[in-house]
Figure (cartoon, rainbow, N blue to C red):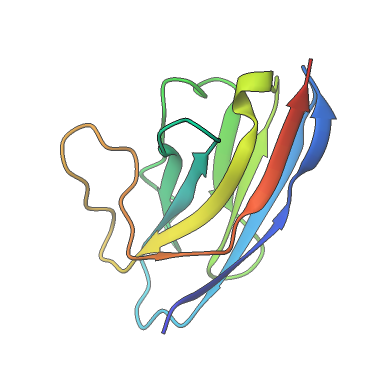
Length: 128
């Protein structure tokens, strides 16, 4: 059973930065897909970014965060970080770490992230 635990998040003023981290356990093989999606009240769920674990390849971002967010592998074998800079109030919401067992990331159409497992979420609040 894949288990995901997020850390980081919090409150920051517009223009500030935050770093989220996600540690996964329970994968059977390497080269799984991990990433983040967010959900704000009254808004649709939005895939933010994804990456292939172990290799660190295949980073993909939502248009809304390109140039501001960076997804990367963390210190652990199945740890993924999301560095968020130039934060805007519209970036506020609950951020969830999500994963899809590999190999690689399989998505439909222009979807940024599809998943079979997700964490409990961490709140990000950006004030203007």
